[in-house]
Length: 424
Ligand code: HAM
Image (tube, rainbow, N blue to C red):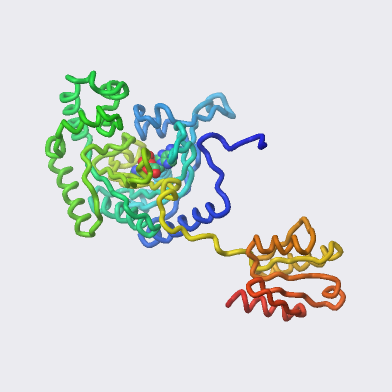
């Protein structure tokens, strides 16, 4: 029985699953390069005020889910930091802190890494999960929204995710959001007792979140409201939305308008979008994003628009069709017929590694049979066998594991043969 298990809501990733991660990451990186996005790596913990200010104090993430670090080297740092729950605010913080505006008035960043939220774990909902995300900083244009959506869709497509939907909505600018909140208040306050307990509180704290409440009664009530974009969007924001929609149609990006989509972070203005997949169940979003025009200024930067997205690695892994299997094994395995020859095996091991070959052996040095079993398990392409004859007469036995043919070769011939096979 193990004494310790990984903490609730976290997972160990290894072997073929880790290989899948690497495949996903490298495909995403290649697409980011195509779109000219630079990688950025920000710290895993940040000043918690960054998120209070950036995401909004009434959001669920900030209210209930921040992993606040108790440790402090100095008294004034006590509970000052938290593990990052998302990547957008840290990227904008870095952009402002390093004054990147000077050289990069429009900056395009991507990031891949762990995020932390103190959630109640369930299928597809973890406390440590991983984002592949991108942020385009410094443009108010709907073409920037288009690029971000095209980029996310490209990654999704090239990863082999099918049957998904992209939902899209616009919340408008600050004034529009206020108008929408007022409208909701007017319409919902009268029948407030029909709302779920959480939404009754949201009426006064975060009314927009009532729109995407999962409670059936709230959903029904909200759907009866019939709020049109024209009811709350100003001319500019409506034009932004319609232009984006037209571009998406032009580039054949399929989307579904969802007037109830608000997303769980307060920083969004204008466009919001989400990628959903039916087989994910209750946590059906595997990615999402939108425009956040206030955050840059809010964090001390110049005024300017930003837009971005993040895809959840774990949820994507649940829906990718045809992940490649980890076919490749080790190139060479060294086996000995007797423990007398360990030293010879170890010398050859480091010599071949130095020369650039993938080589391993079994440190248990059991019987030749058990070493060969290990070679098979590691899917070795060749096995070099060292025994009495080999050492005395100065040659090596090389077994081709594909056809079980064996040959004897001197050291130089062995190197030449393996090099040729490696490059074949
Ligand atoms: P988000 O919707 O909170 O957006 O997270 C993006 C994705 O991360 C979700 O769609 C989901 O796949 C995954 N995710 C979120 N929470 C969990 C969890 N507890 N367990 C497993 N997966 C999870 C953001 O974080 C924004 N920063 C996206 C963005 C970038 N907006 C603008 N720029």
